[in-house]
Image (cartoon, rainbow, N blue to C red):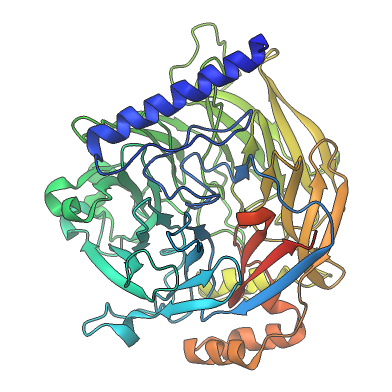
Length: 564
C-alpha cells in the first residue's frame, strides 16, 4: 500500500468514526454509514438516506458532486414525467427490503398547492402524487405563489421525506412500511411558533441535515434554527433558534427595514458548522451536538451588489454555500458567488483563519481567501451572473452563466418574473452561454481559471460533477432543444449531448397551468417555446442510481439512463 493510499484510507476511517460518534450521541436509533470511495468525498452523513443523492445539492456539504460514474455518451434513453408543479430537487431512497428504490420530490407551483410525489427509480413510473387539499381533513391553506419555500428538501435514513413549507415542516413517509410501492402518508407537521420568526411574513427557505441528526434551517428574514429529525423529539421544547438580525426584527414588517435576508439553501459540516449566506454577509452558526445550543461563530461581509436580476430569487449571492476541503490536512472553505456586476467566486476560511494568512488586502475581510472574477472564458467580460450553487469537487469549482439577453416587461410580481426568466432560457435568441472551472491552488494560496467554455448554454439548471466519469453535467440548450450535456472535466470541451424527449407541453401540463391560474401569463411563452416543459427551471442536475441523470423540469421531471 502506498503512502498516499494509506493516508486516504486513514482519513476515510477517521471521517466515518467522527460521523458515527456524533450521531450516536444524539440519534441513537440510526446506524453508521458506509463512506463512498472517492479521493475528494466528504464524510458521509449517517442521518441521511444511504443513497446516491439524499439532500438538496446531494448532501450536507452541498457540493452537487459525486464519486459515482454517470452518463458517458449520448447513447441514452430519455423519459419525461408530467407532474403538477416543478421539483427543484429530487431525493433518492436507499434500497428497500423488497429490492426497490424510489425518488421523492416536492413541487413548486403558482397556486402553492404544496404537492409532492414519489416515483419508482427503476422504471420512472409515478407511485403517488400527494396534494394536502386532496388528502387531508384540515390541510394548510393554499396561499398562492410563495417563491422558493418548499424547494429544498431532505430524505433521512428512516425514509422520512422532510419538506420546509412557509412556517412549518411536513414529514412524509410510506403508508405501508418497507414497501417501495406504498402510497405517501403524512407522518408529522411541525409548525414554528410565531415568536421565533422575524416579522409576520417570515418563512422557511433552506434546510440541511446536521451530522448528529438535527434539521438545520434558515428563514427568509435570517432566523437560523435546529430541530431533531426524530418525530418523537420534533417539538417546541427541542427547537433552538438564533436570529441574524437580532433586535432589527422588531421593525421587520416595515418595508424599509434594513434586514439581512436569505434566498438560498444552507450547508453543514461534520463539526457542527451551519453555513448561511445572506443578502449582505457570509455567516457560520455553530450547533453544539451535546447541548443543542446555537451561537454565531463568525460573520463576514462580501460584495453583494445592489441590483437584482430577473433570474435572481433575492438580493446578494445567488448560490447556496458549498463546502470545499475534505481531508484532515486540506484547506477548508465555504464557497459562494457574489453580487458584483462582474460576478466573483468567493472563498472564506470556514474554521480558524490560518495565522500565516496575510489576507487579500484592501477592504477585504481577513477571512476571505479568494475573490476571483468569473468571466466564463471571455477576457472582455464586464458583466456575469449565476443563480446556481457552485459545484465543487476537491479544490475545483464549476460555475455556469445565467445572464439572459432579454428585456422583460415592467410591473410583474417577482415570482412571475422569475418564472418568465426561467422559461425565456429556452429561447435560443435570449439564452445565456458560458461555463467556467476555477480552482484553488493550496501551494500558491490563490484561485485561478482552469478553463472557460463560451459556447455551452446551461441556462438555469444547477450543474453537477462526477468524479468517477471525470465529467461535469448540466441541462443544456442546443439549438432549440433541451437535453443533458457532459463536459470533459479536464478541459471543458463537450463530451456529449443527449436531447430530451423534446415534445411540446402535454395537455396534462397545460391543465396544471390553468389550475394554478398562471396560464394567461405563462401560456404564451409556453406556446412560443415548444420545448418549454423540458426547461430545467432552476432544478438540480442529479447523479442518480445506475449511472442515471435526473432533473426537475417545468411541470415535470426527466431522467436519462445509459443504454449500454
